[in-house]
Image (cartoon, rainbow, N blue to C red):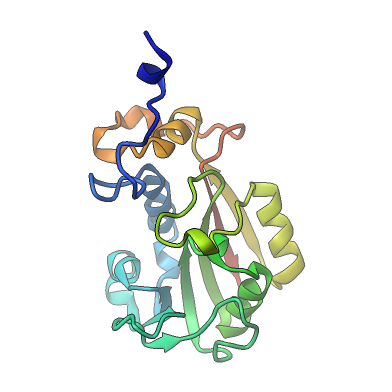
Length: 210
């Protein structure tokens, strides 16, 4: 068996696997959102579209807002740079869904502070970020960071006032599978059953505003 048989020179697709099905990191992201779906209620802000607001919030959501820095996004109701302090209105939302975004921001510190400011008292931030990933095929010039669980904890200890919890998901097989653009649909479900802290693929944060 050759090295190329074990690890091919190119992934199965160039978009994390979206063109072929569901990327492996989405298994963990969606499991995390489902576990905290009770926080997705009231006025909810999500980045670029509202798919997770609708899917996991249901009739608990009273108002849905979509934020994007790109004014050409016709779905966006808020045009703002999350990495610019003060770009979001104070105390405007009960929940923020911020999946796979922090690593694409030049100043994630400012984003965390913005999220805290724009949440109402007792509001919740549900965020995820990659620990391991290829360079973004969509935003290669603004793919700045990767976040180990300890680094994410440090970020929130420094810039968040309130309770928060950090979780990490993944194992060696899902890390390798994600880099190869394997999909959830073609992966045995038992592969996802073990989270190995040595090989996290995704880190997730549930943060509450004091």
